[in-house]
Amino acid sequence: MRRLSFALLLATGAFGCRGDISAEPPIHMPPWDDMYTQKKFHPQGESALFDDKRAMRPTVEGTVASGHLREDDAFYRGKNADGTFLAKAPMKVTEKTLARGQERFNIYCAPCHDRSGGGRGLVVQRGFHLPVNLASDHTRSVGDGELFEYITKGIRNMPAYGQQIPEEDRWAIVTWVRVIQHSQYASLDDVPAVSRDKIEEPSK
Image (cartoon, rainbow, N blue to C red; front, side):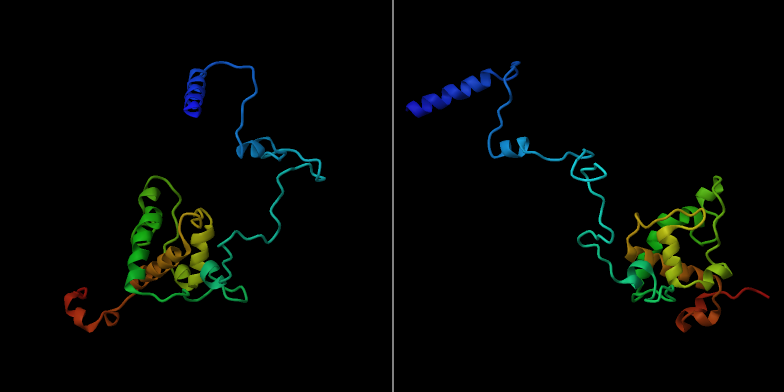
């Protein structure tokens, strides 16, 4: 009973003191007390331990964040072991890949390149620099790995999309660009036989 009375009295006293101004130092209950009062370096703080006086140490060259080793140069950089660009995407291209590539292309690329790849997107119509035609001879001549790097790092007026678009989606976009290119230079022989009767040949 005495313990209960003491606990109630203590709780009442603590509640009654809430909001009051006090000159007494704050009370830090363990285990947080040691962490609060221990000696430590604060962000952007100074340290006499190092010649440059910086408490925050620069990243050691070659340091890789956990889970981001990315040793596969083909997939993550679009390059062969000798540093040359891949001719073909390092992944199996399926209908799902193409559908994803079309979707991501329409989101990230079509505003400038338009959905046909011709370079007359809405952004360009409002004054942005005219981008390259994705079906041009030059663009068709470069390998998939080089297109992947253009998306990753940007080129000329085109910004880099490495931070916004994951690697797998970048490769999917590359495969869709190839579809756009092929569609503009395809012949009737490229169409499956079962679908050819649905296509009208241009009149001569």
